[in-house]
Image (cartoon, rainbow, N blue to C red; front, side, top):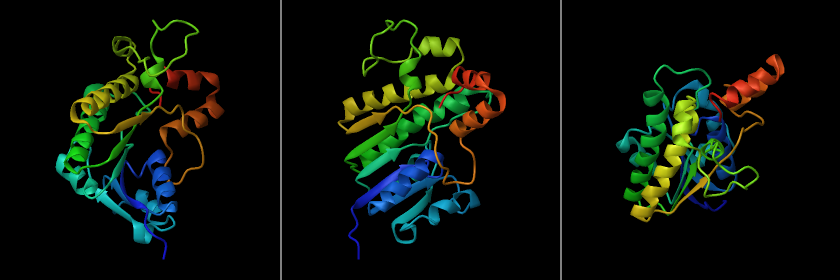
Length: 227
């Protein structure tokens, strides 16, 4: 029998990136706690069909704004991949409530649950949009850890997703500094590739729209709801 490597939690396990993270963890003999909105929903069936899922995967009904539900999923885990975050593909009527609050408060709620459960390390999935929207950054200068998207500029241009990821990542690092929790972040750009789930993700919609409508569809997405 293959020895289990450890136990980790993946928030937003049913999404495009979350599904692939779960798949790779299972393939490396980890026991995985995945958070989803409704574990019995057919759109999460692909997770239970992954190799080793029958023994090493447990899905939890959890909301990133619900501390107790997150604690249930994270308890006993040594590591957490915080992937869950709203990625709007259309204009949202209330960006503060629908995009920013779930991203920022959700991240802090996850981190608080990690402290409570003595998690050793948390990987927060941020975005290149937390880095790239800064009109005052010197032209030609490499963008590194010191470069952040300008929050005022994001708000003025109604780039709510960019604002949400910028605020969420900066708050995560502030929380880590005060709590001592080991937090690292990754800032992916558009994520394209084979789909594990039955639904199309926001990044894949960009490719589809690009094939249907040309470059303008891509540019429109980049200036409104990047992922």
